[in-house]
Amino acid sequence: MAREPQSVVVLDRLDPPYDHWSKAHELHETVTPGAYRVQIRLGSDVYCHAELQLRAGDGVEVIPHLGDSPLLQDLLHEREPAAEAVVSESIGPIQAGVLPTVLPIIGIKPFDHTGELTDRLQGLVPRLDPEAFGERPLSLVLAVDGNDWPDGASRVLRSATAVTAASPVDRLPIAPLPEALAGGRIGLAVVRAPARSFLLRIESPYFGSIALGVASLDRRATVVTLTVRPDGSFDVSQNLLRIPGLQYQEPVAISYTRMLRDLQLGQKLFAGGELYEHRHSAAEMMMLFYAKWTDPILSCMAYFALIDALEDGRAQKHEAGVLDVVASNLERYFHDLPDARIVYALQNPERAVALLSELIALEELPVLSRSATALERYAQGKAPRLRELASRVVPGQPWLLTWSAGASAAAAERQLVATT
Figure 1 (tube, rainbow, N blue to C red):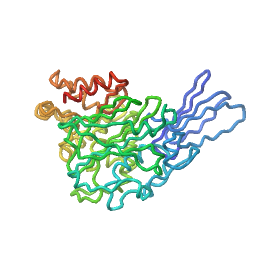
Figure 2 (cartoon, rainbow, N blue to C red):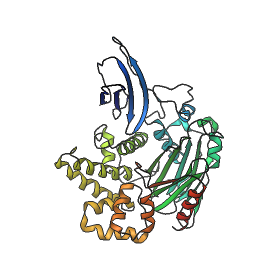
Figure 3 (cartoon, rainbow, N blue to C red):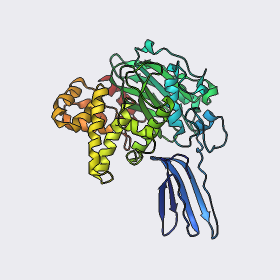
Figure 4 (cartoon, helix red, strand yellow):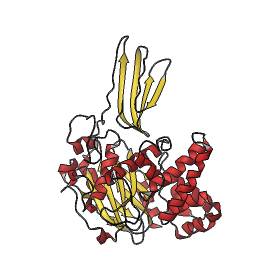
């Protein structure tokens, strides 16, 4: 049984007849003797894995744990995998998506002058004034996981550079956070967002060059997190968050940390193709799903998730009306986000020419690969930079994201950035 209702428990028999079972949240099965594998996942992320050899009469209970991530163990100050974690007092114990939850909290914590977020980071991240960044800060959190780096995780962190491709090119100084936070595995960079749409490149000789389409909005903090591992895998998140303490006209009936937590769960579920199925998993998730003044990126994901569910029969035809609501809210409250305009144009073809032509003329980049595909299809070769990026998006990534490894690939990425 998994703590998180959005989790899926999967049981596979490893020898003939290769039976397979899966169920949300918890799974109880009576099986014949043999070899089995149990996995518990959130979206496409497997956070608990066990292999069992069952004999007749055996009874086994698999209790999920947080996995053996060295970064997570350093964050929690635990040497052995724990069953759950508390990263924020207002969220309470969590079991899945721990790193994707705590890293964005680190990214927005410098602006938490009203104490809406966890006290656990007090003194471990700098306190910054959002007005010094034009109330459009860009916060990058770089985290280094794993113990198999050739020169250690701290060397990887110190080797990383980050620049934005907006004009003029802006370098993000990545400052390692105190060893007490996560053993020197996390760095933070904060600058003023250079434009409402730009390319961000994070590069190191250890993990190559990662380029990501990024957006910013007025009176919002753009929080990007990147977790890299020695096997070449990495995780990315991006949020457009309210700045704690600022007054907004539209009320949000959800605590800040709970909102941040559900945003990360939603992004993981979208990447795993399960956002539509879990839209009712929490009342807060529905608010986020409908673009109700929280983070429009997840709302754009929700639009594409419902499109897919309607096309393959997982959603009923009467639910198509939700698409109008999501698209209208995105256009009304988040017009400056390229993806919001793309979604609205898809839902309202009579506005497509005006909205999409403007994006192409201004060379604005969306943040989602689905949005980029739709815009590139409309551009029909008139947006060479977008076409180049879209053609190299990492397979399976929800983001407009490219990755290159090695010196020659990194040089090619720099050349691409130089032309923007």
